[in-house]
Length: 455
Image (cartoon, rainbow, N blue to C red; front, side, top):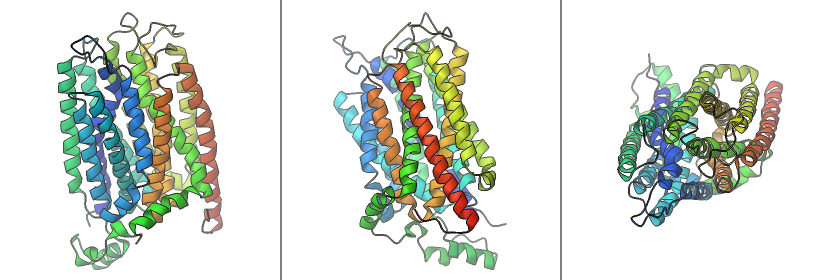
């Protein structure tokens, strides 16, 4: 039986991203709380809520850099682009070990560029290693492995912060050194990815019934440059895609994932951590528990939708997105009842209609993760299917739109109380779900009629 190099690449890609984002997503969850605890020798707190600003810078630069990422990915290939991106994540995490405001902001710009490279490369590489039939499965496998990062990283935070009200300088240095090592290993492991075999190579391999993955036929074609585009053409392709009806409609769904990314990755954990210790035990430690449960929801969703990915070909992707929408609406209502209104902005012991119920905090974290997986796995699947010939610019636009929304979310997260942040999420979730339905139903009808879609 021939070795399935495409499945190997998908699994290895997920493992590499799991390690890199064990570092970065854990950092994002605790960054504001960690920096808020930093005190100078004169007794000042120079980083008060600067974690939100750093994250806003990251996603703003990420959005802009997505327009230069496709030509770089096309020029050097997705594997090189992802390696450069991983190195940028390492630099950012290192900047928080001994933080200065200037280096934090500079590193935020650098990691924004790196994020564009690593995610554009990831989307391109995943598409090259998938077919229409395997795209749903591969998206689920990758997503589940990626979101293990939330589980492992936050498990470490949960036990590391045990008994601490604030984070000491030594604690910050140890935490971020461990995260830097994890990020470095994940970046180096990207060199283990193999070149995606071309369709011509696969056919020859099948005909010859050969297990030799180093055949000269494979090396005669570079499948990572299958589009044949120059870097300039790849750059312009992103703008052309943005003018299509399908991409404009999907942009509304993608924008919602950006707003809710802000909420679950930066706001929700910080809000629980801002509850005064007389209301819940060790609130800073609970940030790690919240992150673990978000990760558990993401992993469950990724595995579930990966295992049953073949059924999306039969029943469509919209039932999964509808499930995510309903789960998120229920979650937002429970959060509204259980969290004080001022919790995203400052330490508080304000009113909680459910009495600071820790079980509900944990349940909401799990549901945030599961709902996020519902939206993101189906967006990966539909983009990989509709734009298989333009995967680099398509996934660059995906991350560009998502990061613009996330940057806006982190910006208003510094000033808006909880109820207004939840209102924005409810409205954008409704619009994003309807727009996804439009594109999915349109292409389902076209496929049933046997026509090639024009958009």
